[in-house]
Each structure stands twice: as C-alpha cells, then as structure tokens.
Image (cartoon, rainbow, N blue to C red; front, top):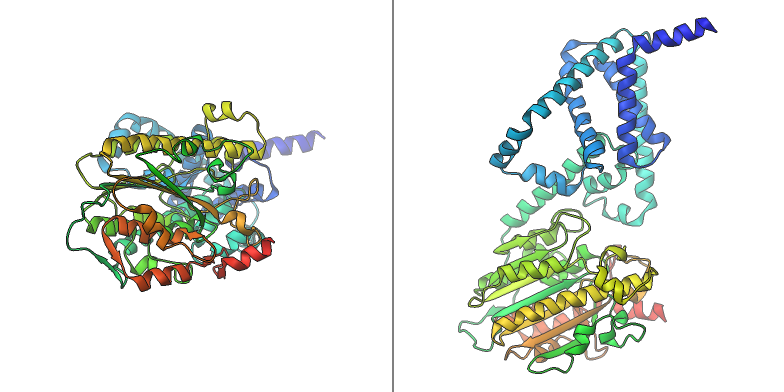
Length: 537
C-alpha cells in the first residue's frame, strides 16, 4: 500500500504542472459549457496530448505558447465575463479603433503582461514534464487524430442533423452553425475559431453586398418633380413575432394588448388603418429582406441585384436612419445588416436582454424637423422567450407567468413603442406616416419557423397611422389581394416607395399581388398561402 502511495505521490510530483494545467482546462470547460459531459471532458484532455506532441521539439514551443494564449483568453471569459465568446464581443474586439485599443491597453498593459508571463512560464514547465513522459508520441498522435477527426465530428454532425434549422442553414453559413453546436462540448479554442470564422464570413458578405451594383426594378421610377403631399417623415417599424390574432386592435377579447392603437383607431386628424397581413416567410432572415427589398417568395435573389428600401429613399432625397435592437451579424441578420449599412445612420444593439423603448429615444435624437427622413426601427418585439421582452409596467397590467400572459406583456410593450413614435410625430406638422408590421407571426409558446406551424406563424399585423395629406390607405389597398383580403409584408417596399415619390407601373402592382399569394418557407421552397390555410382547417 505504501509503495502504491509513493508511486502516486511521485507521479503527482513529476507531473504537477501538467496535472494543474489539466485541472485548469477542466474548470474553464465546465464554466463555459455550463454542464458536464464526457465529450467536453475528453475535449479538454485532448489538449494535454497535443502539448505532449509539441514537447518533442523546442522549435514547436511557440505553437504551444500560442495555443496557451488562446486558453488564457478563454479563462478570461470563463472567470471574469462568465460567458462564452459571442458575435458581439468578437465584433467589438475586431472593430475597435486602434487608438481606443491603445488607450485601453495603457491602463491594463501590466496586468496583461503579468498574466501572459505567468501562463508562458507554466506552459514551459509543463512541456518539460511532458518531454520526459514514458509513453510514445505515436499514442498521443493516435488519440488526437481519433478524437478530432472521428469522435468530435461524429457528434457535431449528429447535433446538426438532429435540428432541422441547423441542417437547413449549414450550406450557406457553415461557420455560424458550427459556432452554435460547438459551444456545449468544445468551448475552448474550437469555438473561438468558429466565432472568428463566422465573423470573417459575415464581413465578406457585407463587403460583397456593399460593392454590388444594384438597380431599380423595371416599372419602378422616381418622379421628376417634387410632390407636396408626400410625407416628410416616414417611420417604418418592423416588429418581431407578433401574431395579430392576439392583438386587441384586431378583436382579441382576452386582454387589451394594444391600448394605444385601440385609442386612436377613430381619432382625428390622425387616420389609423389596419390590415390582415401575412408574412412573406416565417423566419426573420427571409421575411425582413423581402419586406425592405424587391425580393419576393418566388425570387429571393432580387435582394442582391435590386435596390433596397434604404437605397431608394437615399435616391429620393431622404435622410435614412436604421435603428435596431437586434444584432447586425449572424446567420439571421447578415443581409439585413447589409441593407441597414446603406443608411445615413445605422445603429445596432449587441446586448441581451434588449429594450425596444431605447429605440424611441434614439429616434428622437436623430429626428430633424426640417429634413425629409425615413426612420426604420427594427424591434425585438415578442420573440421567444417572451419574459424579458417587457418591463414592470407591462407586468403590472398583466400579472402572471403563463406563455399567454408573457406574450400579452410583450405585445403591450410594443404598443408603448408605437405610442412613443406617435408622440414624436407631433413634431412633424402633420406630414408624417407610421407604418408598422411584424416580420412574421408566432405559435404561442412554440416560437416560429416550423414546416408544420400552420398560419399562426404567418399572421402578422400591418398598421398605418397617417398624419399627412398622402393617401396611404388608397395606396395600401392597391396591393391587397381582392380574393382573400390579405396583404403580404413583401409588398411593403412598393407601398413605402410610393410614399417616397416613386411611380409603380400597374402591371408591377398586378404581379406583386399575384406573386405574394405565395410564402417562402423554412425548407427554402415557395408555397401558396391558400394551401397552408387549407391544412389549418
């Protein structure tokens, strides 16, 4: 027994730095992954085998130190920030101005230098221990290859195939999907690589979009002369996951979820009209681009070849402001962020949870009474989980924590955002229009983006509040399907174009109504909305 204990103590003494470093890796892993799994334990252990391989030659020590610096980076996130690397942090890190970076480093440089120095010393001591270990480096090579080329990819692939949205989006955004699935089992270094790859991919897409030559579609022309009845200020508010069936404006009886909109339904001089909207798609990444560009459910590629709503407003002499409580990058935001970047001012929120009411203040700060402006607000709205999409005011009106009640709170919160913009319209001397729609609907408690989700995820509110001489209701009615009395969000770009002073040819209007009888679904296919309605029945 004493002999065994002596051997154990000797082993601990001989490999104390290695054992401490392994413990360090495991603690970081558990802090970042937030759960225990055999896979994330094996992922951490595999780095010891990698260091063993690198210890053979001193020329490879710089590689080991480089890896260790990344591990130190992960440790900072695990112990100080208590979260994994995110898109927002990567964006902030990569896009910080050099003088800002130098300014920050001037304060903390000694802490960084001391930490890196201790980490490098630790790695060197560990590598010297690993150099003396008895088993062959061929064993380490085999372990590393089997784990990272067979075991880890198998589990990653399985995770992707198990979730329809991961499998669906992998071909177009592989780094982002890998970033999504590696955080649980491989939070050290591997996830950092995926985050950086995703960020790099988004930057490439943004650059390509910015350099592309887009044109106006045939049949859409800007009037040569000015029009005195055009609204000077146009507020386009893009909601999120709002199902009109749950809005008291649309007759919902269980709760007064839209008291502001209800109160001005018949008010003068304001004119409020609301329409039975259908979303062009049940997820943001498809729905919003089809609303703010000339893309449609039968041809999404037009979002890349034809001008978006911001560009056509710029051409019409409007200052363009895009304010968002959603992030700019990510598989669901890339093209939207690209379009927003065309605006004179674009402002995105990288935090969570977010506050849509902050956008009202930002709109006030950017508002210019004497200048023509298109101001777009992209809300977080009622996106699941609903609980953090409201505040104490909404919760006091609808106390409770069931899915329905939490959803009521979020809709009530959005109603307050609309009220804030309406109050801003008081400064426009009766020359403003607010046009609100949600990107898509919601299956309450289940979210959206399901092939089997039915019409609930397409039923969206479309509300126009007119305080100008422009005949908003007459223009909107041109794009309503006379057979179903439904208005597709994909026709938003035509409606706003007319407010901006563009002529839309009659045959274009006719085609828009016919095309937008279709919706674009999560399987990247177009379906007649009428067929989805039949399945509901």
